[in-house]
Length: 434
Image 1: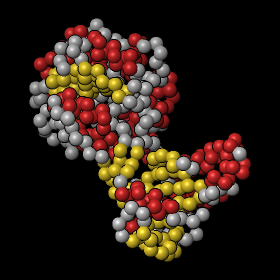
Image 2: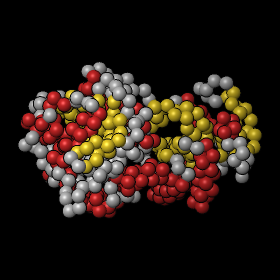
Image 3: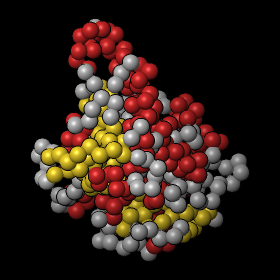
Image 4: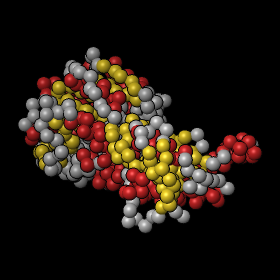
């Protein structure tokens, strides 16, 4: 989908960039200080947002000098806002692009605002995603700078600043790799004060291009007050506040934000289909939980539930599962590998026995609709029905799933043919042999 990495000249510095196929318009993603254009377009967790954005036009990623695949700045020299702004011109010139929609994330808003004010004829529109003109305009914000430096390169920073995003070990490792390739800890320590101390409030009244300011209502780091400050200072800017706590608008859940961007850019409402993926779903629940709770009392029951939850989450991490939600006294999780899903269910079953708990588990592989953090569709419905038929300590799977793990070494016992409520036809089920 994207070109190989190319280089545009910003003075003597090579600015690395990648672009998707030409489209109706150019859309330039303004990097802040930790991106890597070789990595970002290939990250599976961003693929849905990237695919949606390319429907609007040619999407362009680039790395600012001193970061990612671009040249380092000279020893002893510091990055400047002017240098970062000149990178936009360099990339557009190298592509032969007369103008572009600028999509500015948190630490890149100042760059986009200065370019838009200076080069309005080259700025189709400016879109701010959790932006700030002056990070100190809201003294109630949470300051994450210490956490950013201490967590750099581990991927855990992304979980901190994007709490609504799905999370598992695979996602953490993906972010960790991107961070390490984007900037070393030393570069991160240099760049963080640079982006945190930018103040372009005086520039904003000179921004005369169509501007959209998108803000999550519960982001503690880039707060709504900071977004409203931008919208107040830019003439005729449109301010939209969306539910959520994420700093990023390009990770799940991203669809509502994208639809606002698409309508602003194109003048038409975008139809974004729920993402449909093939996945293995796992349902678990505690056997006889109501009687157990009444026997030991609320306090002890809640303590036992907390221990159970910790065990389940530990096994989901181990087997690359994604927790979707709690289902009463159980879990709904999804996996990108059927064998891992079954082994995870077995591990959960065995591990909770030490707590004096029995569970039942049901699994099915099928097409699911990803709706932000939630999933739905017939595949999920079948998984729930399979789980309801499982006996205590039993891991029950559909024939679809059983057929996908032939040769894995897993053994199964026949569990008969069943009608699943609300699902057409008869289904052959199998119990995992222990």
